[in-house]
Image (cartoon, rainbow, N blue to C red; front, side, top):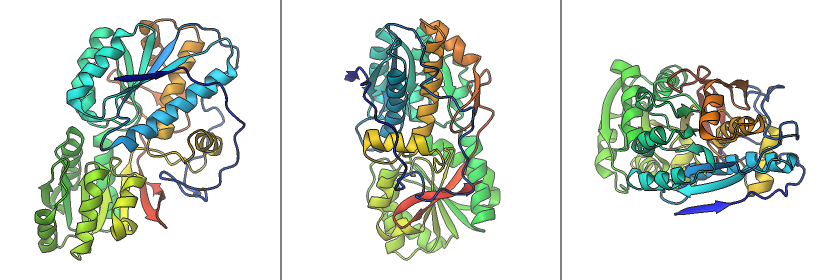
Length: 390
């Protein structure tokens, strides 16, 4: 079912950032990127004129990995709020549709999105499995969708005209993760674990390929699994220097905790699907030893964005919140320039080139970006903080 809302225009002035959250540190890192002077702003020039335009978020809002979708949703919501506050002559409606992150549910939800003619563009879907299940539907409808977080490389190989990705794919992250494991953590013996999702199996394969003979052991877990005794016993016997986990935080947290309880001394490295404060909350003592790789940019120095996000949502941004904000801003720029239909917004994005908070946006004919940074993160005093670009 879709929950829809017209975005409120009430937005107070941004306050100074005070505390860090799931995506950054309280003290801005010298290595984190600073906001570019020409970064696109959803407010525009405040002179936009439009009527009847709607943007939508489609993806998980509830469900096992809901926090990852909510991070994006709230970033998108903030961009639309700021736009509408600044442009009284162009009030863009924002609707949200919940897939619960389930591929089997997402097709019906996307069919509902497509049926609503005023929707010109969609931010989503967050997960690779649901993106794969719905790509043909978007293509047939000619409806633009930009995912801020679905990383499986195969999504771009379908050559969907309507598909665009707002960050690097698993090929990029796989190579970066291998470099981080071997060069930064100095791990010579690495076990690669993956879940059974489209995302986990795809990323796990890329990491194993990039590691070559340094991937000395592998294993698989299942979505929803809570008892990892067989995997933990194998890791205890293998004695790797590092364990790399490709999957999501609901399974990663108990896995990391059970590895720690067993006395497995390997460094635990999760991915963007694990990089969430929910992992830190549920992994026990193991969280303090965890690292993450992510094709997401730390918002340490995006002070206005972070302050506005925190004021609106009551907490700091999380993984892919700035990316959601960026891709929503691009769609809003198209509407501000007079785009009135789906074909027009699709053409606008196809030919778009411009700086955002997180990176420069310019897509190739597969919907992939040329600027695809990957960063590492670690847990410090119960919070996930920037650990430097890989």
